[in-house]
Amino acid sequence: MSSSQTLSRTNPISNLNHQLRPSIYLPKSSIKPVKSNSKISHYTLENSAIFNRSLIKSVRLLGRGFNLANQAPQVSASDKTIEKAEEEKAVTSSWIEAVFPETARPYAYLVRLDNPTGTFLFAWPCLWSLAFTANPGSLPDMKMLAFFFLVSFMSRNIACTINDYFDKDFDAQVERTKGRPLASGAITGFQALCFLGIQVLLGYGIFLPVNELSRILWVSSLPLIFTYPLMKRITYWPQAHLGLTANWGALYSWAAVKGSLDPAIVFPVLVACFFWTLEVDTIYAHQDKEDDVKVGVKSTALLLGDSTKLWTTGFGVASIASLALAGFNAHIGWPFFVLLAAASGQIAWQIWDVDLSTGKGKLK
Image 1 (cartoon, rainbow, N blue to C red):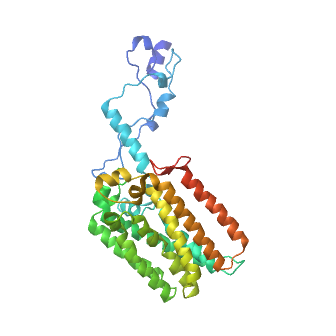
Image 2 (image 1 turned 60 degrees about the vertical axis):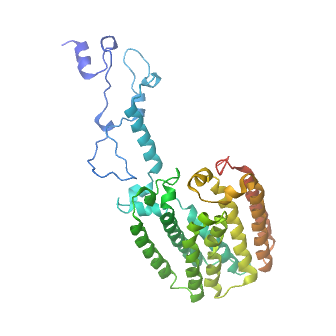
Image 3 (image 1 turned 120 degrees about the vertical axis):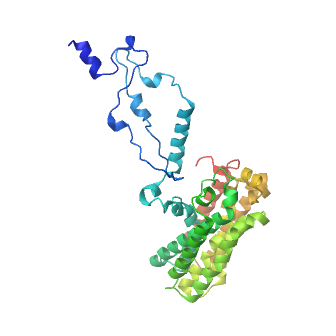
């Protein structure tokens, strides 16, 4: 047997002059097997025999010395569909896919476990309030900080569940939210309400170790949480309602430590957090303003329009001034006010930098 015949057998790309369409040899490891799955989850996309482009790019044709990546690929409609599915899979997949079983994943996405930003929105007022409960020159109780971070996590989860329950029809019409579990049908309304009941019971159970005033104040926050999703239907100021809802923790975290409320300190903290939330969520609402008009809901972004930066500047000033008043009444030393000045600079940069066409900062 000649050497050329041997080469032809061992390498499919042997002679470009005699092959109109040279085949490409790929190792078995580069082809992903397809698992049979009659029920395809919204969050799990299975594609059959998808080749990794990086493998193809590394294959060089023998005798010609050029790379396949230089060739203009002929992409069919089916190829485009597969590529789109791959892109959607990359966007929607997260660590939840690896940690949770398939039946639990919709609930994990429902409470936004893959996006903890909302938990911090609920946690900041608790942490700020707890910082004011500490004696001058001392750090706040670390156990209480951890405890109320857990409380904030539970409160935010409850808020997400009731929000998506009321908004499931609206969310289905908005590009950013149409994939949420209730909007997509991965969870039914009844399942969401049962899940909500479990969350409320767990939240109350967490509060059993603290005093009664703190428990009462947490329970009093639930009507605010439950009615927030309805506010966008009746007022252009749902962000103001959110300012109370998300920051009520400034009251019950203070009460957990002190056993009572000191209006001269805790109320300015609550007001500061209220205006901070109003500023941040007004900017955030600009992401959805076109969809909000389409589905018929209201927001401060629609109300304020081109005047948003002027208004949010006022919200930021009110927030910083209220924190300064709380620090003054608590007899906190000058380092607090230096740090507060730095915080005001950050807020000013945030307002200056934001692109109101998207609700996002240009540098973020």
